[in-house]
Image: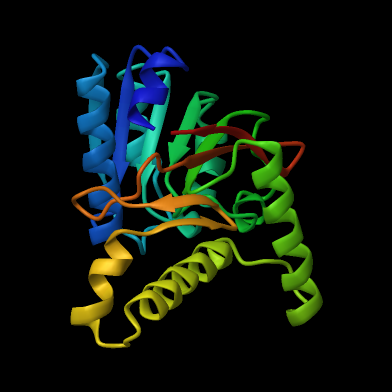
Amino acid sequence: MGHYSVNTLKSKAIAVIDDRTAYGQGVADEFAKAVKAAGGNIVATEYTTDKAVDFTAVLTSIKSKNPDLIFFGGFDASAGPMLRQMQVLGMKIKYMGGDGICSDELIKLTGGVINDDQVICALAGGVDDKEGQKALDNFKAKYKAKYNMDMQVYAPYVYDAVQIMVAAMVKAQSSDPAKYLPALAATDLKGVTGQLSFDAKGDMKNAAVTLYTYKNNQRLTLAVIR
């Protein structure tokens, strides 16, 4: 998201806010590192808490620095009121966040005042080809039929994780971690979320992140990046 803000959105002046939780601080710090690595400019860094409801002082301080984008490390329960208060202050600039704000609930929490294309958020994973989208759509349909509810965001990734573990145990003919973990590390499996394999550090190879925006009070897919 840091690279995207600089290279795609062409942001010249970026402000960062975090809620001092392990998640909020962590994602904000990594975002700031990526912005700087991409040659971007952080003009303000502010802090709040995950219990705060009034962000006027923080936003007023940031407004004086004239940023064209705010990144918030925190959750939708805080992002909603913050976006409402940005509207009051006339701050119609871009607003970014991670999966903590990337919910349908965000629309309700703002009172429906999100400007079209103002908010950009990210969720881990995503498919960027027709075959992958078809597999994911089939999974969504089966999930709803079985549980009588819409698919939860990370359900297909948990499903694939279980399939990886099962395949590794079958290959190793053992449920002993010492025996099946080497097989798991060598995974090369076609899952619901795409082709699954790991690098030497155990990270996903060619991992995807899906960016979303909000338009007409709906969350819409903006891009899948790898």
